[in-house]
Image 1 (cartoon, rainbow, N blue to C red):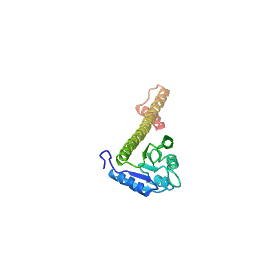
Image 2 (cartoon, one colour; image 1 turned 90 degrees about the vertical axis):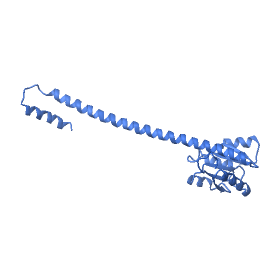
Image 3 (cartoon, helix red, strand yellow; image 1 turned 45 degrees about the horizontal axis):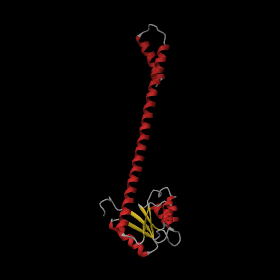
Image 4 (cartoon, helix red, strand yellow; image 1 turned 60 degrees about the horizontal axis):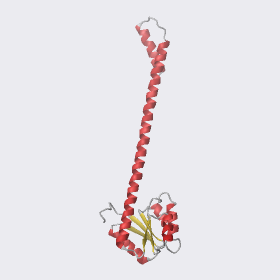
Length: 199
């Protein structure tokens, strides 16, 4: 496995040409990745939602749903939208390449596939994907910590406010007592009566 990869990734290969699909699977195995091959795009989105991959490799021209349409469907799913899509295409005109990027692709690989170039592009986008996931995860954890901190502060302020109100009420009752000389036991009973009212 490539030294830049921490673990094996699962990558969906959507290619209706068995020879090209086999070649892509072999390239992915160089870095120890798991490949799931689909010869048409109809079931890809449902399978990806159930078992999200780390990347999609899509052939642009396929029977049935083509790679561009499939990419749009993938990007419409919130749980899949951040997963990188790389097009595999024999087309070299700028219009087709731009259309792929507009539909959400992060890169493209031209046929005939060159092993070293394909590996380099896949490695780069897997690293970017993992970095983005770490940033999102760290942001979520910090947001959760902020919520917990705010709640703890709110609880502390509520307790302090209630204690202050109790003391203020007791002081008010004490101030309302007439200043009279009385037996020690009577004075203690007066304080007890005030305390009971504020429990």
